[in-house]
Length: 86
Image (tube, rainbow, N blue to C red; front, side, top):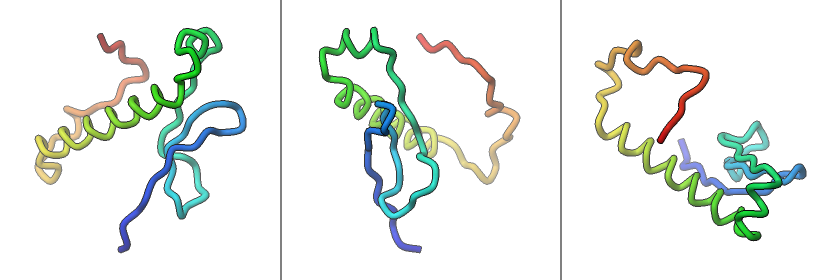
């Protein structure tokens, strides 16, 4: 299997997305900012989206390093519809 390359793109609706360069399927991640948030970021929304995606990739890397997925109890990783992270 060849390695995948990713890119961050701005969608036609103004959202940002992380997608595979060689794949036209749905993006892996989408980030949407409200108009108020965009105004507060003073035209730096692409930089913020990039930082958010970067942080997510780092978090996944740390999780994958810490968990032996072959022996993990998947119930411990149950997904919930809404999480508030502080």
